[in-house]
Length: 391
Image (cartoon, rainbow, N blue to C red):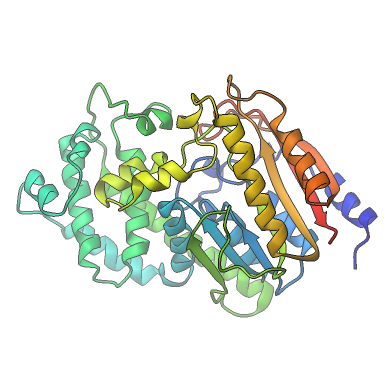
């Protein structure tokens, strides 16, 4: 059993900036199967899970996003639960694990053959109307690009390989790349349509992504076999839910919580899925957006700060409830710029964890986000924090 000195020695020996990591440079990491706003740098949950839990322990991420914590937990032989309020995030997470098992070379070859032979006989307008595709798609995609996307959409609906979710998420992967709006992703989130249309080779993008997904899945299984001498078998749960009410997660059942909660007024996670929702409309999309904690679109509200603090306190209370005695809580916290941040929000939340929930602070460090990557607008630093439940 490790002592506090052991934990400090481990964490103090880490360069938390991870300056050499970029999702573009690690395309064959299953974590990078689908772009997602403000995704965890995978080394952070990897280090925290290795240091703070044992094989077979249950790991929870209540703000699971695209499932980076869950993938890292799986790599290390842990059970996991992932919860997120964004339906597409849940689907991305689930699709990663489906890909690990089902995105084989045979699956990829069969999909490629069908895509190359695909042809829609009816007009794009009729197809969109018949399948309930939002006519807003005509404002984002050049007409030939849209025709290619429609042909792929038709293949996914046919579901010949019984992998609807996997292929839907693969389709979602390429929408931002296929769109004629090439500026910062928030232009799409905020409904800023492109001024000019430009053809993008959607079929080519889709097949390239299928190749990457298949190879990333093979690599995951190869690495897992090297470590455990067997193929990976799914041992987790991923569900749509709310971190403020972790119903279905038993009290004192989780050994470690690892998460990166939303930062106040920085991102719109649900709205960032706008393009996917046009092709596959999600019932209740407005409610999911409305319930998102700290969303960027809410930053103009007079009560935005107070709402965020109260919501995060509820989420942290739930994390405390489901943790076992002496269980650990590892998280990253940061803040964006702008008038919505009235005070040191990170300090206030850490104080709540320590003085109200009686967590013991084990370690805290600040990591620099050296590249102002597209997924971290206005966030230049964030804090890596490790706490332990005392009772």
